[in-house]
Length: 227
Image (cartoon, rainbow, N blue to C red; front, side):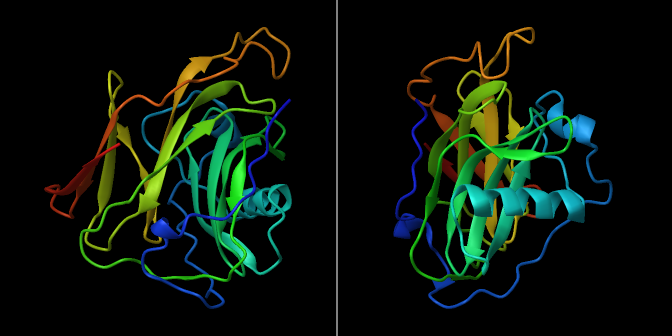
């Protein structure tokens, strides 16, 4: 039976936060938004971008899944194929959806767990080269075809790019937007011929060691943390 985690959002990650109603964050839409086939297709090491319709669809699914109030909205959405979306919410309440499922017909369903605060948040982009502290979550549940892990956390305005390096895995370019970064990677792909929700690892175990680097606009490493 799937366990849903809806608890207090750890205060340690609320760097640069004021307890007040949030202004609408920027929706950083890429110049070439991903197609539905790309969003539900193969996982990739670089992030995809969203159009306004899919952004709103994912945001609404997270709001329903973790029961955020209407005044909460998406600060950050991470998508890179595999039919997976990870969402950081802010506003009337803050928190996250650890993994939502994007289906081939364009629906977005609850899958993994999530967290929700009980207080309002006004998120401000942290200054300088701050990176972390990081949160580590699993990507699993529902009818997801992938299981895996994710990392996320605050990122300062002085950092342009975040590189995630899991031990024994290729480098991953994180999604960076609105003072937050996140990235996920798969542990195992289910048998593509198995029924929905079947063939996944029943338990992922511990996340492998990971190194996270923050690069400035010149591509120089200005901060590094390990998880």
